[in-house]
Length: 179
Image (cartoon, rainbow, N blue to C red; front, side, top):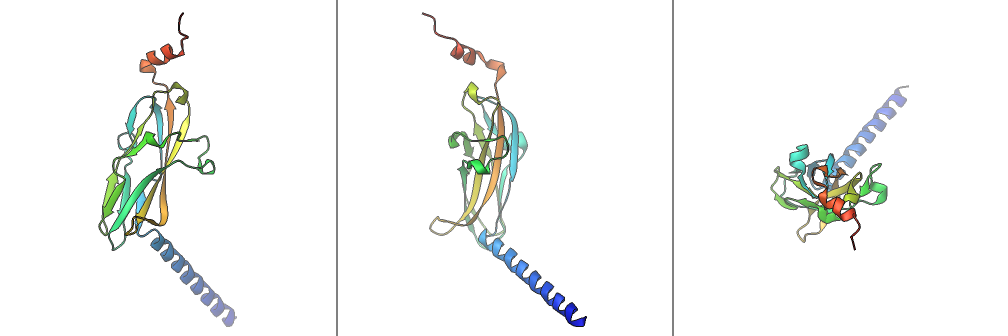
């Protein structure tokens, strides 16, 4: 009985040490980079308008350097693959619709930076009623500017509605030209 208890204790100790080593390795692979944004959903964006995620959702993209070293960070706008899309969402048709206030940062040890994400929708009535997804990838860069470690992935989803306050242009575009 005593042997079983000792063997279990050793087994649990080994398991705890292995899981601690794995967690430490995962932290190193991200280079001490932590972000806040996760998944942000914006509702009822009108076509032909520009929006600030900070103003609409009070959700700036926050990047933290949790390491003891200075980090160079780049945030990239990425159109997700179909298997990465949330239910009911379509991939963003054009990455130029999403702009970052700042995409490149140099973060001293323990520092934090915030940036705004802006969404500009073209005036296209066919966009109304659809939900789009775009991903933002934050990566730590090495001295040569190459990404290292895994990207921190943030999702931005937004649904589009027709801007009914001024739909004159849409009505004229739908009418057939007169001879």
